[in-house]
Length: 161
Image 1 (cartoon, one colour):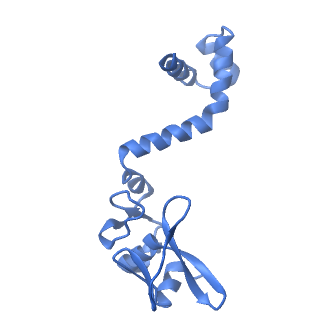
Image 2: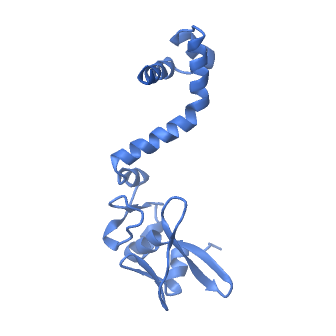
Image 3: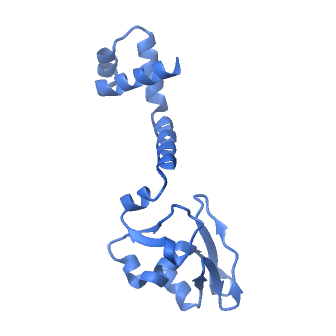
């Protein structure tokens, strides 16, 4: 048996998003941001039990229906603002389209943070070997990385000094 989709259940229970604000049959609901900044609210499925529903996904279901689940498209915010859940701002697209909705400056800053976190240990090893007098090629050989990786690290070191 297939588990029903959250947005389908919410719609069946009478939940709607009007002008970007979630509503139950009783009126407007308070939506709170999750750790990534997307607004969400609780859908009561029966007494004492609730599930989390994201506002942008319910808007997408209201706008596109079951197409939301075909081909696993991403729900996009046209303006890149996760809190703007107006119907005009919600689109379906690929993961790439979704990423390109974020302003370039934000994408660059995010990529830079991820790169620093991901490669910090490798960079320390490269720095240690270079400081010990090894060249670019020997350092790359020792660490089993491309020479371009070590070369690019030397360029970053020059920027900092």
